[in-house]
Image (spheres, rainbow, N blue to C red):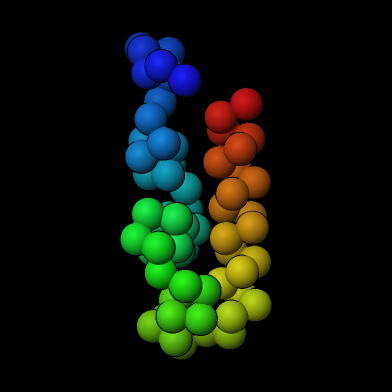
Length: 65
């Protein structure tokens, strides 16, 4: 995918996500932080982090399509 005026970069797409998804996806996909580490840092269950990652990925795929 070559960037041009009609297409956004992945960073621009991530920036459009809700804050929670943006934070967790950035930690996980960009900074390669594990689900368990994210859960510990945020003080939430791992299943909640996994759920946000799944929904965030789906939302990104929808934005790309």
